[in-house]
Length: 279
Image (cartoon, rainbow, N blue to C red; front, side, top):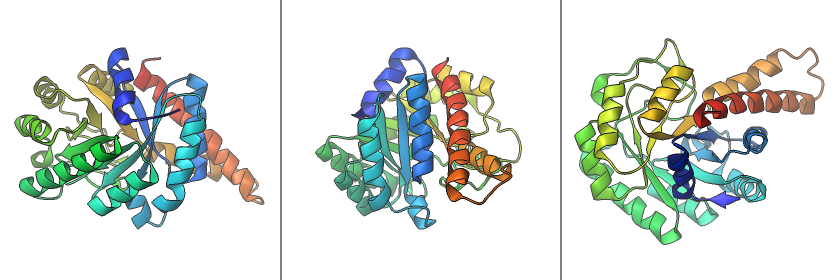
C-alpha cells in the first residue's frame, strides 16, 4: 500500500516508535526490505538517493517505477522516498515519476540558499501532494557507504536554528545532525542526546536520524524516546548481503549469489525493524 511520509510518520508518532527507512538501489534490496516489512507486518520506507545515480548504482528513471509498483503491491504501508536530493530539478523528476516523499538536502549551502531552496522544494511537494523532509546540520558523506568517522561538532544541528528552519520552511520532517554519520563506523558514535532533546522541545515536526547503521540498540531506544521517528539505514544491510555472498562455496550461478544476498539482507532488516518498532 503506497502512502506518503507524513502518513507513515503519523503511525510512528501514535506508537512512539521509529519507522525504518532503507535505501534500495536494486531489485535485491527492494525484495529484501519489503519481505522483512511484510513478515513483521510493519510499515516501511524505501529510498532512492540521488548519489546512487552519481555512483552508477541505478538510475531513478529505472528504479523509481519498480519501487512504486512493489510498494503498491505490498501488504503493509510503504512510502517511496527520494533521499538527499541536492538538485531541485532532480527532485522535480522524482515527483513526476510518483515518489510519495522527497528530501531536499541543502546542508552544504549557506543558510539563505538552504532556506530558499527548501521553500521551493516545499512548494513543489505541495503541488504534487507529497511530503518534504529537509536537513539542517550535516551527516557527512551522503549514502555512499564511506567511513563514518567522528564528526566536527560545528556541523551539528543548532537547536535554535532548527526551530527557525522548520517554522520558516514548513517542512514535514527534519533531519538533524547529533553525532551520527553515513557509512561504516570506525568506532562507536557518540550521540549528543541533550542536543536532540533540545531540538525536539523546539520543533513540532517528526525528527529523522541519518547514519543509523552501526548504532547500538541502547542508543536506538534512547533516540526514539527523544523523538526520532524515522531512521535511515543502509550500509550494514548491504554489508550483510556482501558477507553472505563471501561465505558461499559455489559462485557458478548468479541467481544463487543474489538469493543468498537477499536472504541475508532481509534478516538484517528484520532485526533493525524490530528494534525501531520496539518489538
